[in-house]
Image (cartoon, rainbow, N blue to C red):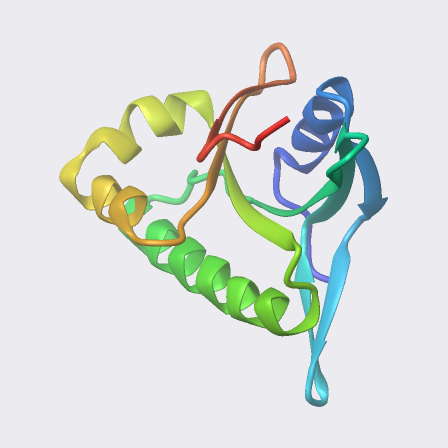
Length: 142
């Protein structure tokens, strides 16, 4: 099993505080003879007539000396997992979870903006100190 990201439990707590039920920790996706592990799978009742929203959340800390290298890895994971989910669980949407400070600094730089501008990209911003979700990009409709 892969090592958990430093903020794994923080994001898990933030999701629970936001009304999500953790269904998978990790969420295992099988593609051919390979398994890939997304950090968390969660569901939330959004409206009686619409049913439950389902998400997969990949947590990234961006603490390595090369933030660009971290971005490259996160970008690849996000879009690989997204493609697998479209085939296996098309109602589940994947989000990349990053801490507020990373979003307010690195993701405001031109290199970070490239990912934010990518069609189909989804981001969950959390505050590690208070263990809460600050925003979903795009917002999940409740």
